[in-house]
Image (cartoon, rainbow, N blue to C red):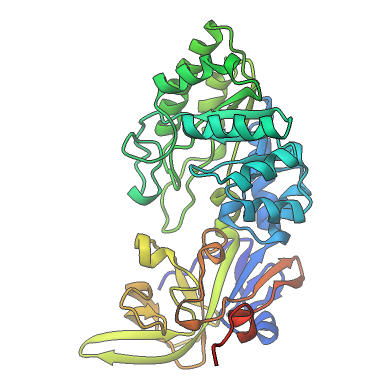
Length: 421
């Protein structure tokens, strides 16, 4: 089988390390399954992004939906990053991590009254609005609170991001944003909305985008709207291009940040405003692994199965997107044959799998597997299905590690339930 190694996760004497810490040392403390993140990967990814766009007036906002652990958020805040949140819960997490309100963006196609009120109470930098009704509601609530809400309108540029349909967000068939003409019409009525200041125009066309072309096309279309507004005397402060930069899960050829910046900076410099970025997956995905233990191996007819103690409730992406995550042993053993196997969990669903017909070294009971590229959309999508406890999370900092979230207890699962007996 192929082994993927990086400066962040590598084999030393046939054992997998995260940074300078042996994975086995971590699982002795936490058990399995467990999410393990490399702090230096997060820092390096942010600094790489910042360096690529240093010639542009811009701000970077970490997309909290990709990994909402407070310690992870704080890692980016400490680097000068802002936070893009998509719910009241994510805003609460970001504030607990130390986010400053003037570096908070509230996104989301369906904001509640409570979410809008919370954003206004904290005087956040920007509400990204996605419908006329939402804008009218923000104006109404801001009026009752004697506040002025800074609002950007998310425009749907009808651009195909050429990604999985479930994570494509910039086509007219998607629920997100407003069409260009409707957005312009609402911007033009800004004078009638006494408690709103329109400060931004926004887009986000999807996730895991592996070509620069969709970004270029969408920025061109959004720029046309920007200059239409400018011609109407509407001078915006921010031009938000969202996130969505893809990462290699299966050896995909991904554009470099240098190529990305070279293609976009000339377009963005034509705009007289600050550019906002909202990366998430790019900053975290390949900085994390999910480690699980092999419970059993078996063969049904001519098909091999490796059954692990991690399941779809821990990592959902393979089940709902058929997403690829590379999987390899924590310990390497000489003389082991490769086999084709389905790597599955114990949950009572046929959709409970991490890989199908995958080439992997023959595994034995009580050995360990690492599922790679789990730093984003892993723990945040986990659940308690089948009454399973969500796993702990660990952050490795060079040669030290900290448990930044403990494994749930069974008491956690029922703490607010009451028996009728």
